[in-house]
Image 1 (tube, helix red, strand yellow):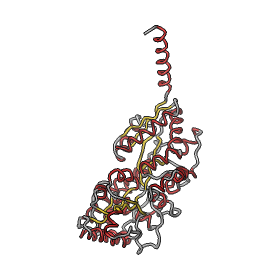
Image 2 (image 1 turned 90 degrees about the horizontal axis):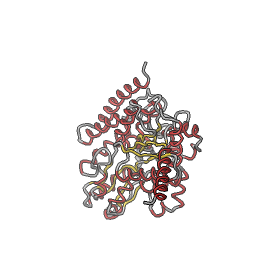
Image 3 (image 1 turned 135 degrees about the vertical axis):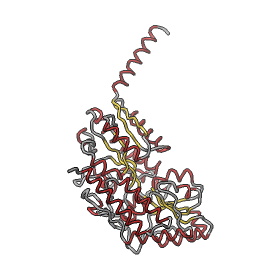
Image 4 (image 1 turned 60 degrees about the vertical axis):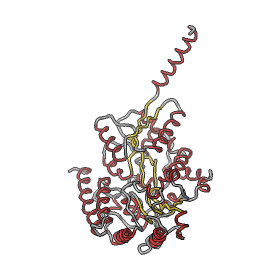
Length: 435
């Protein structure tokens, strides 16, 4: 290589090295595996391409529980990331981690980034606000449970898309009589059949505004209304109208393989169902139990938010704030929503999807948004904030599985879940408020 070319190449490398050195790295620990993990990587890569000062590095750390546990351990070792994705039931745990979290609204204001709390969907941000209305973490992948249905199977069985639990039972009977192995199933049963069923019918799951008003809350979801609904579902299991298929999304194949005609779970399964189902499908609002309410209240969210952790320098927080501005932009949020089925977290992203014709070409994909926005959330339908709720959900799973297995009645299962859950709440309260 001629000397002149060599010098030019050296100069280019020096500039490139200088640029790379100048980049401030932002670690983003997340729990999105598979295709959604690839989408997370794309968001980070696209942000990095917009500027040269910051580099967001997404790192997959396992499922939600594993990611939160890893972040807590890393914080104690002072090796924690700037951003960590935490699922909604970890909110109380994060709030109790005094000195560990940097509230997102404060971060944006400190960094001089534009921030308008009114731009976000109320049912989404209300889950993550302090009693004074300060947003603690940035909504990212928010969803709500919906009723997925196999339109081809319903048509073949002469059944209508149900809007009430009585109609769910009728449609299930027709599907099974027409040859399907089961009428309806669901996943994430605590979220769908305890937390959202209660919000949908404006019933509390606990005292103290479902835990929002204090850690000294107690669970109350063992009421007669929830017990009656669960007993009825258990009775449907005797002749295949209902089939239990696992705790999280384990029962998805039962729907996509054509085994079950209806499935209740997150709207965020849109991408998976679109790629797997070989039949025409749709999504509808959750069914109403007309013995409890004349009309639904609103559903509550699931999914996760992005929490910013303390202990980093000003430049890193500046970059973190800029990334969160990018992440919540209408263009990024509408793309993420349309790809995954998670709801757009802002009104602007929802309106952009409308103007792009997404809901016209994909009918029903705004069901979760309509459910969340159906009414102004009440103290019973805002969400829930219980300490140790990851463990409490495990308890609920165990007790409901005893119900599906015929070992307990619904009332016995719910009473046991509340008693065991309240023990876990008291342990959390002692940890959060040590004397």
